[in-house]
Every structure is written in C-alpha cells, then in structure tokens.
Length: 194
Image 1: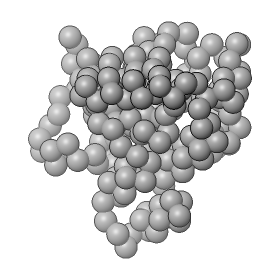
Image 2: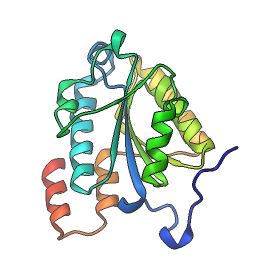
Image 3: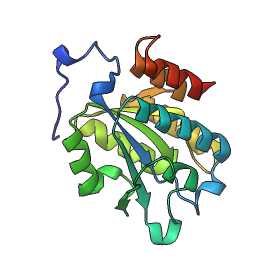
Image 4: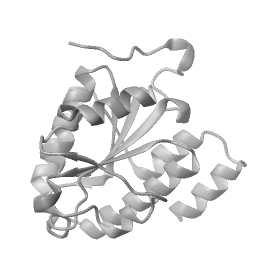
C-alpha cells in the first residue's frame, strides 16, 4: 500500500475537514448519461451549490470525464462554473487509475478529497476505495452523488461508509469548511444554500 500523504496532527483538528487541507473531485457528470441518473435535477443543483461554495473558499476542484466520445461533455451547468473549464479524461472507472488525476491530487497536497458525481456504485465507489489505499481521506457528498437505480446508490453508500470514508452533505461540508460565521465566505455560502 503506497501512502502518499500522512495525516499531520499539527495541521488537523482530528477528522475536522479544513479548507486548507481539502480538494474536490467532480466525477463524470456528463450530458449523455446524466439524464438517466436518479434525481438528476437535484444532484445537478446540489453540485452547483457545492462547487460555487468550494470556489468561494478557494478549494481546488478537479473534474473528470469518462470516455467523452461516448458519454459527452460535462453538463453545461457544471462546466459553466469554471472560468476556463478543463477536465481530466479517463477510461478507467477509478479516477486513481488515471495518472494525470493522481498527479493533480498529489500537486494539491491535500488530505481530504471532497467527492461529487456519478455513478455512486461504479466510478465513485472505486475511486473512494483507491483514494483510501493511497492515504487520502475521501469525503463523499451524499446529496451530490447518484446512480441510475436508487438501490445501487444505497448499496454503494453503505460500502463507502464501511470502507472508512467520510459521508457528508453539501450544506454540512460547506459550513464545516467555512468554520466561522460572520466572515465574507460565510455570507456568500449562506446565500448559496438558501
């Protein structure tokens, strides 16, 4: 097992997710598959809020696309959130099997990887397992991940918890990252989650 990052107790409050030690990974929210995803409108809206909040906090956001030739581009609402959109192309289910993705995560040097995307039981699950093996702590945002079939998501979320990942929600993780009320970041995030 290759550990590329050890939790430094001086940089952490236990398992508290801190903005300076977090990066995000948006997995395969692509135009040809996304309309078939359970509750896709809700997932799109929540993921938009998540990304906007992460941007307010200055947290790096990486985006993957699975076999773009077949599944199309990232959906417009997500792609449009980035000043200059770029994605990491992949054909493997796990993002960790894509060297460019691992290179990006290692360059960020952040322990907590906040995850949104599809499908919960395939690419999200396999990425979570591999991130843990590589020494990262995945934070799966339950209201920003889904699958075509609800039961697949339910089963995947159970395994994700069993594997040791943190499970949170969009609003919860944004306020945990924000940490204090009364700041400009808090005000901006409060508007987003209303």
